[in-house]
Image (cartoon, rainbow, N blue to C red; front, top):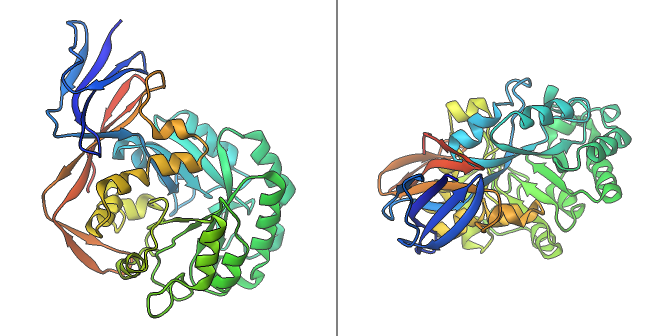
Length: 373
């Protein structure tokens, strides 16, 4: 039986380990230097220069390329960037969710999805502007048909999406969530609806994405302090997700949040082909580097795309490296080199330390990646 032996890998706490993978299963995790490969084994000695974590999870992507411009190929934003699992955040509604899930079955990257509460999904960018496009019964049937893939419902509650429908799509989404037991991911942006009304409708386990956008109608007031509606929501168990995107992440907002002691639960990209190729997102590694630059520890940054994301998905095994589980690893390095980081408002920061993904071990495959960090 041939094994893959990965030696002298560094965990985010600084300790060194050897990891053996046999037939796609983690066969052993041991102190560095104790797993000696046999002649029939393949492997690499990383000399303590490469980190390992459980496979990165990006909780907010758009991976349905048929919807232009807000789509991309699954493996281009997944394993090719060091990301083992992605969660499509509402690209598809009930009309086409089956196509997205079928494409996920053909990919090396593991795919989960939030189902758009609008049956038409992102075939239009005002998908909640007409209430007849919201069919709760159809959405509930789709969620029950794909229970292993659909992890919640997505509602984009900002002015350009809801139009004259106001808060009603969120009320409908709330009812759907309560009846099915699946949480909501809610996109926030320019109002109306007012952010305080939006936050009041969210419950424990729901996710607010674009939490550090720099637009009006945000979670922080003009002085940079968290609004009361945010504090109340956090106390109820509502979670914060970054969802960087083309227009939804501000360094200034993130810095104000840090001063106020508000930190995201998960870091995600809101990536699609345009902001992958042209920025300001580029990759999950690029977004993680931004938070490293903001003063977050490496352990916290990586936990936001491993342990925390896996816990929210209800799949804690995806956030661990455990003997007997299917191999699910991301290998990456932390390099001392300068990089210009750009937020969604065009503001720049110069980083001197960057995160570079090296590859993903998914089952019995090692997939090497090269991305802009």
